[in-house]
Length: 162
Image 1 (cartoon, helix red, strand yellow):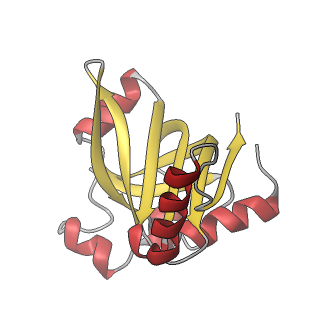
Image 2 (cartoon, rainbow, N blue to C red):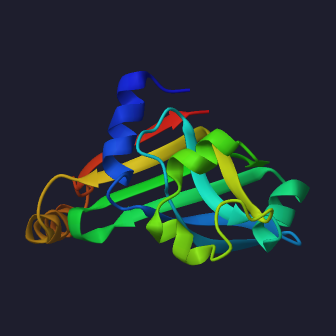
């Protein structure tokens, strides 16, 4: 998969974005919805609270393969991760990650039998990070258009896992 150092690099990219778009298959059609990260570190697994009665849970039971993407246009950071999703009743983690933000979405509290965690074990992904300002990126694009035999150097792009 990826080294501990690379996992830290990915965490540094996504930890402040917090909200990723989770893509599942709904009757063979891709469907995306926002999901809020709850963990405070990344070891190859992502955690999200969900209702066990949510459609995404049924979709991931039919097909465990999912994709989640994070985007921070202001800083030029884009991360896409693919893996497998499973419902988890891990009480220790439910207690650990519970906070006032999450509580607002679950008014019955963390002991509500409908509260669960969605665990995504990341298997592969790709990330992009712009190295310069938007003005520099526009310059690189213009330069590539003029030279015809070059592509713009907009920053870092790396695939991992898989």
